[in-house]
Image (cartoon, rainbow, N blue to C red; front, side, top):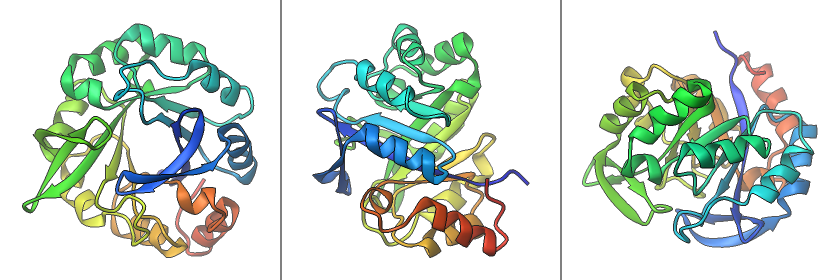
Length: 250
């Protein structure tokens, strides 16, 4: 069995780490460079950097900040936000990213997934999916969760894999920041459709939420933000907890 991963996430706005609830009510969570160093030292398996306003502001991601973070850590580094072309992806990789995360741009032009996969390999392509339940159906949202794409999550999961995604980062907008547990029901609905690893995001509030995720679903990794940013859970303590429960963890 592949060992599970613990991944902190840096949501970036105006060069600072921020965190909200259900994608709104953002508050400052600290300096991203210091947080990145802290997480690498604590034993994080990977780090995700999402420039959450790049798409809405119609600009590219903050390459300088990506470069400064990459120089301070020695764990796999995924970067997303404002990546619309192979050239954008190349710039981010040259700045120090190991993987590229695409979301809105891929929904608008799915061929982007294939173009990046063909250029750098599927292992570099993480398709981020923001999902919310609308009338008992899970829909894909874009533009930082502001707009429904009119696509069912299951259908989009199938397409992104066919187009070359090497990994899926799934965020339940309904669970985001609520700290009431991950969207295990959604992940289990998607499991029969999955051929690549899935990172679950949204809902972590206590150590038991990570335990439930890994026991109840096929998720390969758990991503969280506020519980790590505000020292509610230490990554080193979380890993000890999971190992004690015989959950295979890196």
